[in-house]
Length: 560
Image (cartoon, rainbow, N blue to C red):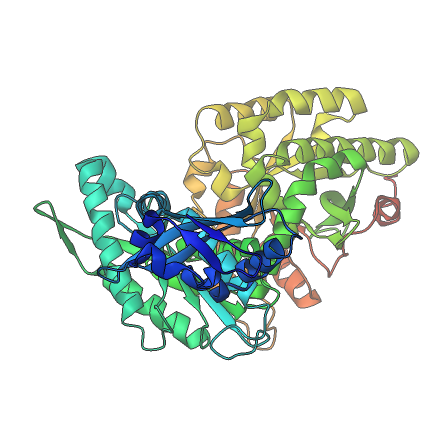
């Protein structure tokens, strides 16, 4: 300790301060106290020190890095300066906190590093990423000296096949494999010729997820080259615990201007891109694509609003005629659902049916479509008793069969609406019906016994097993549009197309099935399909999908 006067000069010091500073206590008299502990080296500490001397502040407390007087090693000192009660001097206290500081550093290292790989962990990674993005907002930081042009990059990778190693060989072997992977990642980061300063930060985010942070990126080429090097390094076999192990990696690569980028935004983009790499076949790197991400965000927005949309009445049905090839009359209509989305406008089924099947909302939506279509078919019958009533065809997803009691739903809706079962046709895709057993087959048989028609939609794109169809309660086939489109070149028809379709139609008729041709767009197509023997046609040549109010105008005149 030392007493300091109002000018900041040492009045007297004890032997402890002298020993700490490597000097005789008497030699410290009349020396500036600030010089003894280098307070001028820290602007904030120096300002506080001056305010204490002038009586504008009650106390100064700070930590300063000094040199040990013996060997010059770093010495951390806690410095306190405060007025002596009822006196004219101030008391300067200097405490050696080197051991405590080093212990804190060791504890922080343990806290911030992964014990398995010795890499920085998720906490330190996010701390470094946050600092990098904050620094980029100041023009003086970054390799280019301009915060507006500083770029940042990230490789987010997940190991392919690591779970199998853990499950078969145990976690100890898995941990050793992770450590070996970490070594190769670090080597890749250190060998990058474009790395600045201390190199790239390689971190283990958890499980078998790793990240490489590239500060002051030189561009996309640097990141993709790094990702390629990492991919090659990880795919080389590992010799671990007497085992030769092989894994690969799926890597998401993001590179962009640091200005305006947030931690959450960068990480979300990197994780999304890594998922794309997985979905695209694994063992690859994939670069972030804003357009693909926008599509994903739209898909997510649709998914989150699908269920409430049914309750809000955002869906509507249009109807496309099914026309008899022989008489040109409308025999039935297919109900096609449309989503009048408040943000994205009118959406066709291909924009949301797949999402509905994935999240299960297809059950609720399918039930609404079935009820609405049956109610409308009955309304046409009541309002136009003179016309021959058309049957209504409704698409059914296979998940509706598994996740709900489709037979009970159909029975209840027919009873509720008063529609005859023979005026309802359910369409299931070929892949959903082929190989049916158990509950799906039981449901089909029960519906057929109720006199509900069953049709196979998009026939010819899946198993195309006509022999199997003979064992199913199916009444009709709808030929996929790809077969019909082969008939478009009327000037130079391909005989093979006609042979294939004619064979399918002939076999279907032998099995007692009717055949509907989809996507009929020209008179020539319609005539060739009629000549081949198709029973019904559907497509723009006959009519586009129309609102329910237009259907009565398309119905045939009453029979006399």
